[in-house]
Image (cartoon, rainbow, N blue to C red; front, side, top):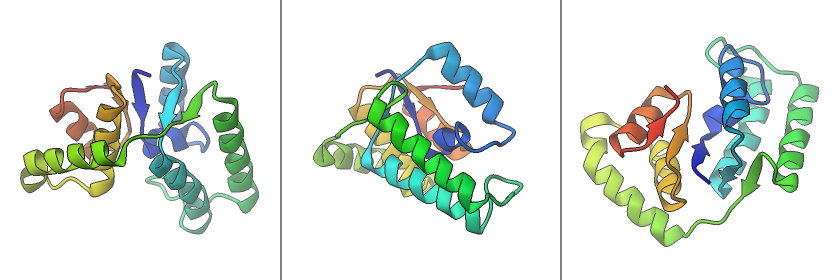
Length: 151
């Protein structure tokens, strides 16, 4: 598994945003099987539900409860089929150790969020070479850690 996609990227494969076309093109061109860790699975589930209340993306366009439910089902189906995404286990001890090392190297200087650090640490533990996200801070962190990013 050489591509790690964070929640920010994965949700754009389900909910229409300006970045969706780019996400779909990247996904089709690479045909990856994204590793999905427990955190990503929970964040994606919450992102769909949050989009009903507050909207999705920068424009904050609200999503209907029916669309969120359809996205939830499609996401569950994709995980169970394991063709595009696969639920994987990562060692909490390894991710924690990487998290601390990354935080010590970069957070005081750049102010990275814990979730961004967790995703990059998990990608490293899973030996992913590429990191896909539309979150500028997460992309910056992945680059600082030597990963290839979408751009």
